[in-house]
Image: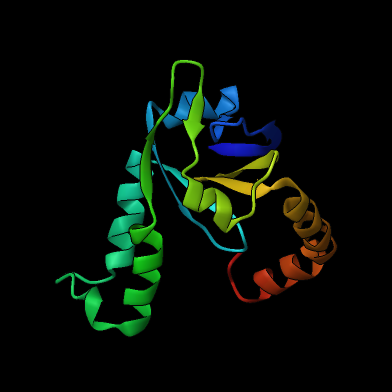
Length: 148
């Protein structure tokens, strides 16, 4: 399980080091793609395959018939990139993904169970502040909705 928060520097070649705890679980190749809430998602190959199957959303794989699904899948799959984890645990963040979330110098790497999220460190700090204030009301809502 991927958990924890780490602040790392992105170098001049767009490489960022994955935390050692994440490297053990992620393997030598990962998928990086646009995420939600102004971040990027990094998946292991195995987890990416699970996500792909869930997004096809039908036994006959006719997910392309839904306009919403086509749009979401184009964003998620069309901008995804498979990247190698180098010998010292770094990955290359493609320019177009770096620009998408406005990464400059530092990034927040957040373990969220089945994926790693990559955030602009300042945006992450703001998001985290809001999320912490909403934690108790969200827990209450989720428990009523049967999600917990």
